[in-house]
Length: 130
Image (cartoon, rainbow, N blue to C red):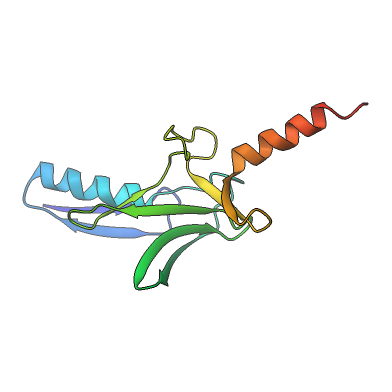
């Protein structure tokens, strides 16, 4: 069985070869989870770039927004080595606001969730007298 699939943003086309419907489903699901990100979860821009950084012999896989420089990090399964998007907050809850997209915050020397920063700004604005 042969399947041709084009991502939602029309940037990537893949041909998958499979012996069964279940295997085709698995291949397509894995492809979509990694390559079918339609836009940046922070600014909704569609100009995205796949990035692989190597630090101390470890590869880090990311999808980077060319507009706002937010990144979606990918983890690696310990068995099989396949990738998955990291879409959870540091507390383990699902990131419903930015779907895992984060920006580097140089001042705090940490990665901070964009939604946390937005909430901070809104709180400050709310406390400014009109």
